[in-house]
Amino acid sequence: MTSPTPRLQVEHITRRFGGRPVVNDISLSVMPGQVTCLLGPSGCGKSTTLRIIAGVETQDEGRVVIDGQVMADGKVNVPPEARSVGLMFQDFALFPHLTVADNVAFGLKGQKAEKRARAMEMLERVHLARFADDYPHQLSGGEQQRVALARAIAPGPRIMLMDEPFSGLDNRLRDGIRDETLSILKEEGTAVLLVTHEPDEAMRMADEIALMRDGRIVQMGAPYNVYNAPVDKEAAAFFSDINVICGRVHGALTETPFGEFLTPGQPDGTEVEIVIRPQHLKIDFDRDGRGPNPTPQDGVAARGVVERARFMGRESLVEFRMDHDGSILKATVPSVFLPKPGMPLWLAIRRDRCFVFPAKSPVCPPSIDPR
Image (cartoon, rainbow, N blue to C red; front, side, top):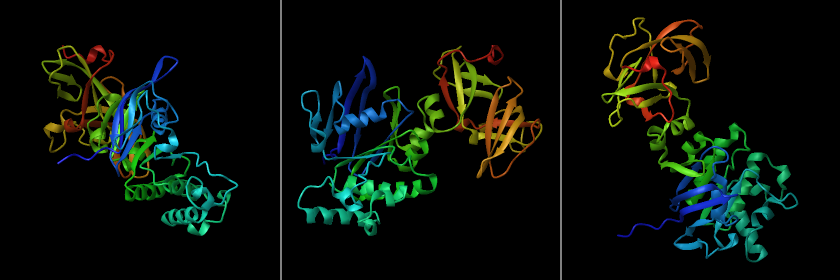
């Protein structure tokens, strides 16, 4: 039994500007009905990758393949309008002098009646048929975004490229319109490549996340795996606040104020950074630092003093200045917990919720060295 062919294949794409690689050896594939998200900070090459796939930018190396047909490889360069690719951007780019229906019909081929019928069909899909004869300025931002979606899917593209199309919407509308958009695209069997710099959006929308940094994909996988098994400290920090505790390896163990951590495979003397998210830093309310039922996963408790506490809506964020080195660690607590500044509390770290990475530069003060 043969495996299904990817709708989109990007193979070793590189693009240089002034000799500097802005997109550096990018490879990925997207199946029909799949949503893949290019996630990363501004300037990391996400939009340039999208433009190369669309055909409005030419790569220096690599190739783009759609449904097994080469679109661009240095010799072949199929024009954008022949690639069956839809585009959606933050700027809806609706024509102000055309009605809503005429905007949707603009890129369609055929007789006027056929184009009108297809436009009305798409407007029905996005629940805007009643606005067919209105003009874009008469619609809300969310309605304009749905018109842009209807226009993008009307020609029946095999691939939809989306460059932060929801960032111009307020938070109240964003989630609903994102979910509606994805539902329609999946029903159509469209392969979707979405660009965003917002981790929450990627986690909500994507079947697969490609995390980019400095023109490269540094990690790719399902949202759960990328979040829970980050490839390095920077990858962990991109998805949430993190706490970092440093230490040195000695005998496959790293001694810290929170006890020993297993660090197999690291040579003695190697500096490591132990990363833990605020929600996994445990406050031990027993003043001696050991609760009534301590577990091996919690290790040793260390004392800190509350710097400040803030209520964030669904949780409270508490910042501690640690006694052992004066560093600041953050912990989140469900519901309301607002201890006063100066209050001492004990903290413990869940071993099964930590990530340990070799330090990329010297980070440990001498007091952390167990030798």
